[in-house]
Each structure stands twice: as C-alpha cells, then as structure tokens.
Length: 224
Image: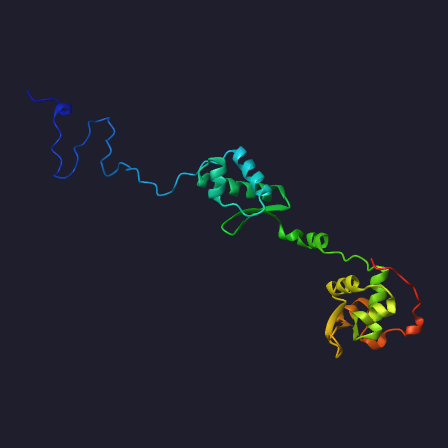
C-alpha cells in the first residue's frame, strides 16, 4: 500500500547544503551566520578617584612651596601613582567647572596650584613694589648731589653738616644716585652723580632744567 504523501521522505539535499528542516520549524542558523564576539581593543574606563584623595591632593599642593610629583604624593597618600594622576586631573576639572581663579599646572615634572593667567594684571598690581617716600635727609642729600655733581661724600657732608654715608647708600639702592668716577685727590674718593631715574622721577629732560639754587629754601634735616 503506498505511503501517505506527507510521510514520503524528502530527497537528500545537494552536497554542501544543510538539510531542510521539518515543515513548520525555523531553520537553525549556520555557523557562518552566528555572530562571533570580537575582542575589544578599547580599554575599560578608569574608575574615578575618591573625593578624599582629590581633596588631599589639593591640600598638599596648596601647602607645598615647590611642585610635587605623582610619586611624592603617592608616597604620602599610599595611593597608586596612576590614581594620583587621575586625582590631579579631577582637581583641575573641578577648578575649571567652578570658574575658580586657581588651576593645577604641571611644572618641573610635578604638579602645583597657581592662579589663572587671566588674573595676572591684578596680581602684578598687588605685588608691585611700592617705593617708600624719601626722607628729608635723603632729599637734601639728593639735592646736594644734583647741583654739585660730580661730588664726593665728604663734600656732601661738608654742605649738610652730618654724616651722609647711609643716605648715599639708600640713594644708590633707589637708583637715584650712582658712582661716576674717582676724584684725583688723596685716597681717590668716589664721585657721585644723579641717574636717568632721577630725571624721570622729576620729569626733567636733563640737568639743565633743574631750578636755580636760590629757589630752594634751607631746611636742615637729620639723617634717617
């Protein structure tokens, strides 16, 4: 008796092809269709350093008079150098995000906290040395040098009537008076004269613009 058509076996598939699945069953994927996982060449993201390490780095940089290397901070905190470097980056990011005037700067192979360059004009004004006003003794000595130059210390003292060694040193340090030579006399004493800074301070083009001596009032003063 002939078998039912549903029970007739399917003909064998050609060589190299997978057999057909039974009716009503989805074909199984071939090995070529299976997705083989590819190795990832991207490194896993590094974990963020703990907040307390970032704060410790900030404190150390703030207190240190010189840049600190990652190795130095690692030795102080017992944290790996890589984690210290990430903490420094996190600290710099925190400064930038908050609009802080501070920044973490790499210098001399280490890290240091500095002010942002945009605030340099204000800091320069703060740190700019402010010269102290000249004492009466210094003004009198400067006037004698200006009108009698080149002049020796003994000649200045003869006019003022007091010792002028300290005052002359102060005027030299302030770049208002300088040594201009030696006098051809016993001991070859130093000759003093004024400087371009003296002219700039008084707003003069040259010594010829000094007021006449008779316009100066006599104000005896003591050396300070």
